[in-house]
Length: 124
Image: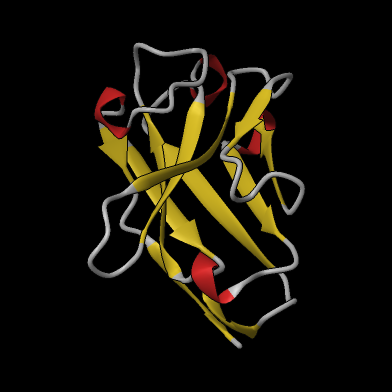
């Protein structure tokens, strides 16, 4: 299983970025996907997740209304659309899956496979 994130970068507060996570080595459409982030000196935290079909999403309160997760099972890809970015959104962002889960879990320990991460930096 391989997950590869892309789309990170540097933006000013209020800007937008769209992260992508390309999956291979698994039947992507069977599994939920989680997005997490980790800022320097902080623990990895749940950002949001999407279930196997894309019919259900769940977001952390800190990003609700600003971030949107989607997936294209035909392309084995998931996306994290981030709008109205704030300096506190600065972190390395990761996508993750576990082959035992079709629904969303908030605990990072539930996920076995992780991407390498992509850096997001938001300046004020």
